[in-house]
Image 1 (tube, rainbow, N blue to C red):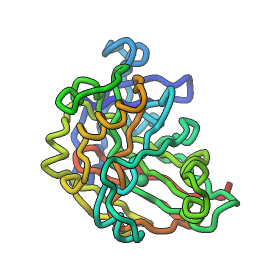
Image 2: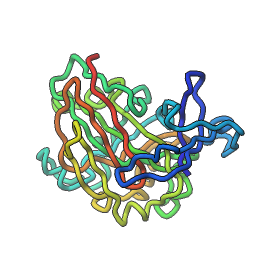
Image 3: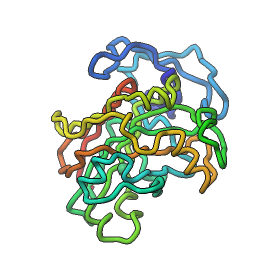
Image 4: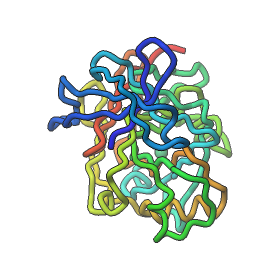
Length: 269
Ligand code: MG
């Protein structure tokens, strides 16, 4: 099931999207969104009579993390190497504030404080229930679904500061979307799903989730051994090799096989 958040110009609502994805991860033109009563994370799936063509609504970030987005650093060997880093012995965690989250099509604002703004295309895991100390074999039970994330990073500030808070934390530094796919599981990603990033239409990252150093169950276990996870919290699983700069006026698009694609323009703040 694909769960999205959307607006027709009125208050945001949740809905379920039907319709197939084409070879480029785009929804077919006549795809429909059926509205839901309330937030499915809290009230389950309650379909309403109301439906719209997806083309006629604006999709929003499919989840608003109540507490946190947990980033995982250096979780693909080739990416760790490209920035001159070793692969960590255990998952390297950092936080992005929930105020960094934006949706499909929303601008990524280029802050004045940086001169090296990078995209990082990533698979994102959305947590479905409150949990702590989750064993890896039970990770599936606490996962609501999967979406696409862009872990936007001010690379110069990340290197200059001794924590990553500023380099990772500006408003608009966490595009998420376009929807949450609930029908996949960690094995689908362990077997390999393609993750690609396009900058102005050109491929700049192209990798497989099979190459994650720490797989999804390991990440859920590791993060939940440190902090309680709440419904709607997001874990960004790390970016593959090929990170690079964006400029004002660029468009960046992240595609994950089976999840669609998430595109955002870069704008002056
Ligand atoms: Mg990242």
